[in-house]
Length: 103
Image (cartoon, rainbow, N blue to C red; front, side, top):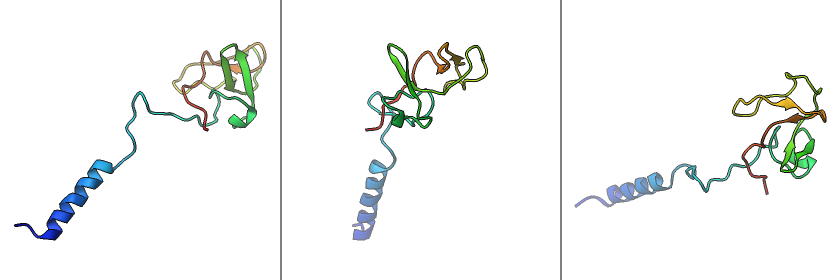
C-alpha cells in the first residue's frame, strides 16, 4: 500500500498537467487587436495613432498619413505585405489585420 502523501502528490501533479498553460489556439480562439496600424477600428480611441479612417466600404482601420506616390512611407503589414499610400494621403493596405476589437 502506498503512503497517503504519495497518492496526494500524484493527484496534485495530474491536476497541474491537466490545467497548466493557456487555452489552445484554434478556430474559436480570439485574437484581440493591439491598436496598431492596420488594425480595424470604430473610433480614434481604438488606435495608438488616433487616426481611424474609412478607406473603402469595408475597410475602416488605424492608419497614418503619408505622401501620395511615396512608396516608402507606409510600413508593411504584419505578414510583410507592402502597403501603398492612397490618393487621400493615408496608408491603405488591401485588408485590415485579422483581429477583434477589445471590448
